[in-house]
Image (cartoon, rainbow over all chains, first blue to last red; front, side):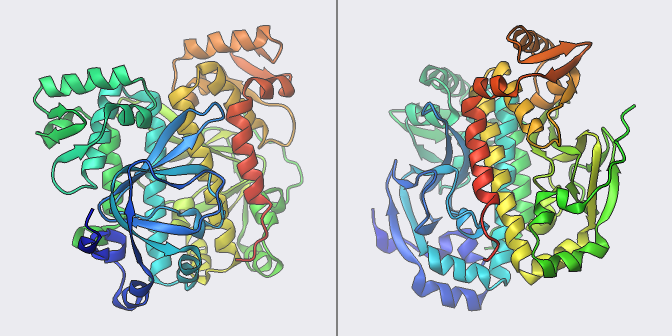
Length: 240
Length: 243
């Protein structure tokens, strides 16, 4: 992976920083490679850094006592991984795992806290982002109760696609099954149906999305509800 | 009819208000308005900016999401442990959920503008509200996981405990109908689960009402789901307010 091609402006929150903040943050942002499966933090950990993905995507997982995990949110180039640092809890109830390898930036815990405590535009931006993230988690709770695997798979593919360049995802069925908290066979069957309908092409861990519109039609309302909230709460992203 | 008991009431029955440092407490006191919160009252609607935040003392409020198909799902429970209207201090105003009183009682409300002013001060109050929000996130995360993995039986046990935690006494009474709406399941599923719990002596179930008899047994049955959430809450609430 070519780290020299990384650029903080590829993260929409960083790109939305006003000039003064941007100049102050730039020397403190460290470019990092985020490998597939890398655990950015475990539940209960005290965070040492926050992360701003640029080309990577992370999943927040709630881990149950029996070891089973459920994905509760997805964070990519639109956001920040590690909100508990400024929300004040110091540690977090979820685990953050890299779900799609790529690049990002990180900031030390102290730098993040200092910036947040200035109580300026950064604080307001991060609070709005946190509200968007809460909406995503809330919608996932609803989705897990009410919607079918077919719909959830479509939603999940769209959510990932929104955070990548192009229309290709590199993801095994195993990983998707883990994220959705279902059996792999279910994902195989659902993916097969989407392929039959010409919406995706799926071979050996590479998923090409052929019809985004088709996926949006098949997804449950949860995709649109969350997207609308992100666009409303973080209009800077669209301009960036 | 479901009229709340007129007991002497104190804003500090709400844990967040009780945790306010003296200066902030005195600043807020004149503006905290005692209100009756009757069963079913809608405190904020989906997509609309609420006019007030609410700090329940004896009432319990559900945050509900309605799907396009008209089904409901409770996404969080707020009682004397918290505040309704997080979006007002997070800056987003409205949310897709609605807040509805699920167990009648009382609470205190504060005008939205006052909350926003407090946020701009970025002092101990904001930090307290953010820590509460963090605890709320943990509750929602657990709900998401529960909805993925747990049976109706487990969902119901968890929900009964969430309610008991937020009530002044050990008495919790709920209709099956309400439970089904909150869990987002069919009423028949609740009936079946309730019968099982009754057979186990955990609840009494009569004329559509569920009454919890044995909290310890209830906790045992839902040990996993509840314990983690409670620990997180307690940890977050016991933290000192200094930023």
